[in-house]
Length: 405
Image 1 (cartoon, rainbow, N blue to C red):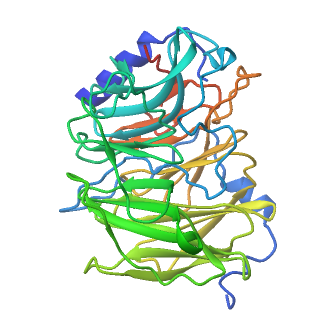
Image 2 (image 1 turned 90 degrees about the horizontal axis):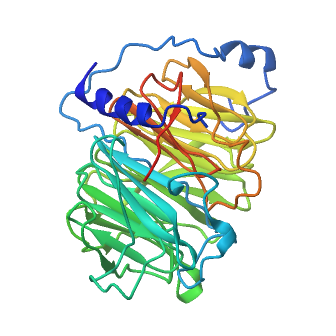
């Protein structure tokens, strides 16, 4: 057992006793239900050998699931927290999670004098210990930033937090924060960071302009990189991993989806068609080597992987209903988490259904800002719909609650 796993297991022991919470590439044909379910091996870990990637820093930081249709429950930073938004148990109410190496960051809500208040929870020892504190941009204690999402770069010292209208950044492992002005409109739709660079997506301004911007992770000198987006198309999310930056592009007319991958020159975007119709949400994530996409809708979930964005291998999963999160893992596999079912799938198409799903049956009545998944080194993380942080060190075969306090 390595040192990383020992620290996580220490955190899990700390929480012991709490329950763990052919021609037309877009035509996937009829759903082979029997074959689909046969591929699902509950609890069986038929993992292929961990692939060796020389010279590539495998970054497991999660790309938060971004959506143009921002859920109405999200704060814009100006709402006074309601008293009934509090946690259902001990510790902070976890909303979203991002991880890199031994470092884990989570947006949380904690008990305070006015009910519950927004804060950021940080751990540098795989969840064994935590620092929970409000974000005060510019060091002004009178200003508390309400973070809906958080993104931690592979450096583990550079990170961003945002809500619908504002973005703040830290380049000292979260000790201090400063507001960031992004090119484009007033709506901050998301940030995703790789090992060296990050991509941000803003929406608004003249003619609801969509802007993709890129910056080095160590600073916030964001520069817009023009993308050829048709009037019927919308950018729905951004993703990053290693030295790969990208965005998902969907059309409301053709219902076809594409990825935009930043060209090696860094001056433009390359368009690649995805092997499915965008009948529902389309997710994408990467570890810098393998690009994963998941297309929801049509009675099933189509999961596909590629190393160049052109040739795809696909596998069908049962339909995943409800809010979904996705995290590329640094062994070339992917974690796809939903309220009813969650899966780990590798590039060879071996599917394992994992327990528990991200939905939390003990969370009746709890209103959450969303949940997410993260993969980092030997650990996987899930923020459940009930505000619990779950950790796994055995490829998702078993999960335990990690208290954030």
